[in-house]
Length: 242
Image (cartoon, rainbow, N blue to C red; front, side, top):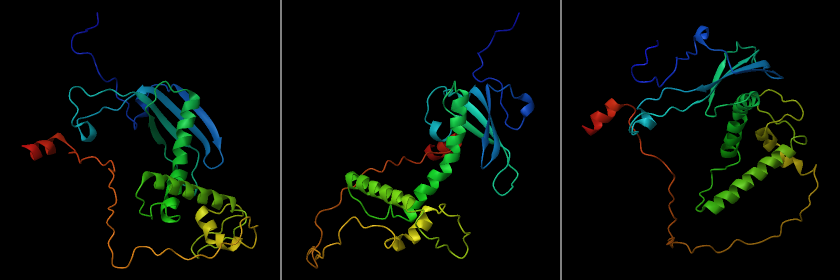
């Protein structure tokens, strides 16, 4: 008879990423033909979890640490741009019971993150998203929508803009200019497009605050949501408190 004495196991057998001999059979294996990476093969294992420890975010947790199960995904592509040797990519999703379509959606969303990161970088460095000192959340929302509208205008003007590239930049094919390179030639598009609005009327600026006077209306301060710095290990915490 099996020996059932002792505490039940909390964690199952270890899943070592560098030991394929001990991997169980994946629940799903999908194959997708891509134009940029060739054949992409995704394998997934359901209801796997990482072993948490009392560190960083979990250092103040009392009692047993939770078991957070999810889906482990291994993505392998045929080649990478530049003929580099592709290495497999491991992804983890907190959703368990994922189907084959969910697995493909996860790794394709992961690849799209590069476009999102470059878009936010363009908003901040080129379009000045974080440049003005805005005081109210409503003004921040309006400014964000204006930045989004300007980004849409750059995409619409892509077929009309000239490639004013830097000496170190490679030529881009027609219709494939980045928004930052479209912005360089955006001022030259006035002679190519129609002007639906009338010419701006001349006006004078307001008098503003009298010279030498002080602004007596202090700007409101909002909580930015920062958290306190936690100790990395229990040893560092005991040294600080004891």
